[in-house]
Amino acid sequence: MKKGIHPKYVEAQVKCACGNAFTTRATIPEIKVDICHQCHPFYTGKQKFVDTAGRVERFQKKFGGNYFEKSKAEPKGKPAPSK
Image (tube, rainbow, N blue to C red; front, side, top):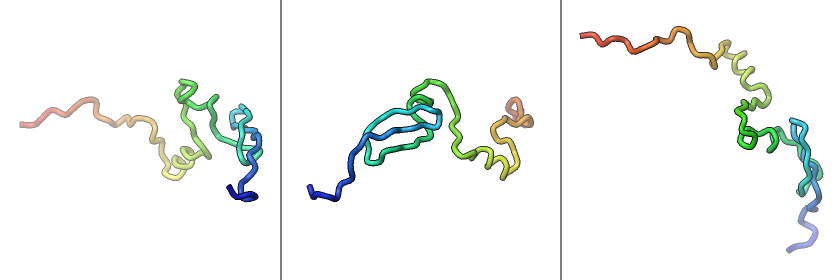
């Protein structure tokens, strides 16, 4: 290995947006994450929609509609075949 070209490998404090913090090792001393093992739906078993930076609200504002509700004008069944 060449000397002087590799970054220092130090203890790093990882901070999540949910408030959880833990220590690991990395080349930078502090890491900020949006989601961690304490709040991720895969690990918690709870279904949770993760919206980063308000993308859903921005989409609804831009296109002016609520696309996540079922339409009330949907037909209840199949139309009868005509002969």
